[in-house]
Image (cartoon, rainbow, N blue to C red; front, side):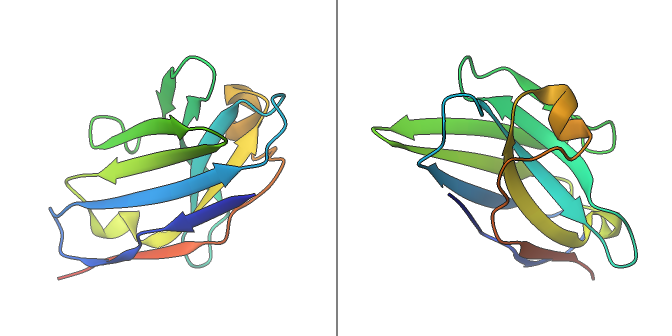
Length: 123
């Protein structure tokens, strides 16, 4: 089960943090990713983190601006996406999802999706 939260409205250049609470996953799905879908566009992979060793990966469009991290507390994992220097083109519904690895997530091969959370970047 994955539950995303933290969306909202922000001005260009601003920051926002999204959170994804993860629980009850099989150990096979050891990567958690963030994805986004803008109006009229396909859902795209944004970033992911290994729940096993914390290694991270980013799409070129967000590299250097977004930071993904995870904390673990007993049976619950929280994966945060800190988004800085936001641009209007970052506006989208953001989703978290779990997958087998980076390449799977980059292809949107996701085991389970959390509900989306809207980010709007506008002046």
